[in-house]
Image (cartoon, rainbow, N blue to C red; front, side, top):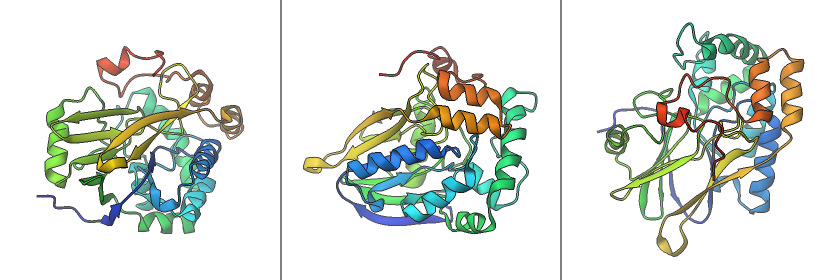
Length: 276
């Protein structure tokens, strides 16, 4: 049985559902996903964000205020949890000597300095998890895992670990985030869907970023990952202007991560291979 607080139940959702995660303070990407939602005629009630509004890029405050005013369903990622608690790092538990940890010592203090008191107060209101019903399934939104918000769960992560999450959340459909790569898995009627992120490319050698569309047409569950291009040059220039990690700014254009420290072997060997 799940013993967790801060779970918001949003009830039954019908129709098309847009899911995205990892805005990462990238306002240009956020602006683009809003336009996509508008073209699809999707109201805020049909949109879910899997957390980490704030991270690597240059406009954390602007992104938080946009998400806040948009009124979509959103959970707190590990960065929001850390910021609202006044912690000194992003909570990813990176290797102390690793490059991810070195870079986080640049972007996290920057974000902490830029975020307003009103944004912190709004983050306090964010649930850590969302429960819902969709396409006849019991759904659950989490960031990393039910055990640890900053846990990295990838497509190659063993199914037993995912199975534990389904069992402990009493769900059949999990919408997850955090790992930065889009993927979808189904086994024995259980669905683990990760929409990927919009704030950084998916390490596939393109500047594209990712989201997912779900549909309950004819009572069944249908889902498909989608990519889009946006004004990454502006986002990268803003990062450089604000003395944020040059390597992350370069990633916005190259689509290649600076390192694969967090990746399992299966995902590491796919670096630079265009996702289809």
